[in-house]
Length: 452
Image 1 (tube, rainbow, N blue to C red):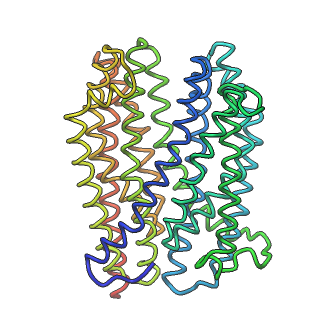
Image 2 (tube, one colour):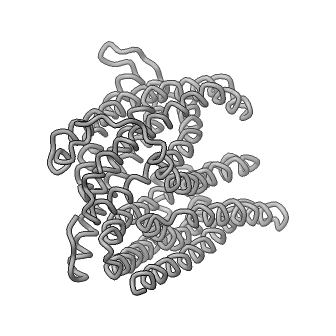
């Protein structure tokens, strides 16, 4: 990370951070995609089980992974304020915390996975595959959280390209292991969809080990000597992380779990409706990687500038990031409007499903605009270490407003599936306006504090 002195250099530095983050996010997204796709090539029952297991795991992982994201603004502000001697201590404490979180997930999961699956009234084969997939995946949870922590440290130093290379290097390994373990190749057992869980777990171990080697040996990470000194667990530091991380994690959980909830509520409709809804949501989630990546890049640069007390630069980065996100959203919405039928045909050849999917993708266009405002602002506020309002706005926009409005429109105004989409769009728009108001307040307050 470097200090910038004009708007052009700021745009260049933001792009330098953003592109690798976007590729990394797409790479991580692709791992789940290939788990589901390759399981589907094996058998329909396997793809059903893997999809259900993945849908249960993803909100939990995203929420708890959000807690670990607290390390990014912490390190960015330490580096920005020239307090680099404190960085190793913070990274090690975050690693301790991430392992503790992973162990908690394993413990809770042991007692809750089967009861949750039992509530879903699944076919016996699907239930078994979903359970065994989650068990297989659990062998990689600890290294996954270790990698996420080290990635937060790497990205906070502005070296997002390193995370990108690690993820891209792991993707073909994951695909190869999927092939070997799903289909039983090269002497390995034929495990079906469950094999994708073991393949992903092994991949998590590989990226964690590579990240550790990078932090120990590669410049500029090596100069921090993160693993050179033993530190005792600091409950005070853990408390500081959790104060920032829990609101971030809950906000992410509310965002990701709402779509699982809507899918569950829409299970009363026919198969064509459910399939069309899932396709539209899946593609909207793919497009969401753009504002999400801009958000993560903004957290890094805002934290760096705020730590250095260059509040004017932080505000300028905020404006650049939001403008960039809105421009990309308008471009994506335009492309989606004209090519939505082509998008639908990527997923299915069933003309009935394609027709309904193109209808739902019209709603996905409006998702792009709201996401382009709320996601970057969340990243900006995290850079300021202001995370509590993000949590409340996520709870309000998705669960207190979006879901009830959607349910009401769907069931009491006979709008059917459209009602749920409209409810989520309304809630998301209100959340974006609330976050924009909060950002304006925070930036004004910081300016007043600096001048007083």
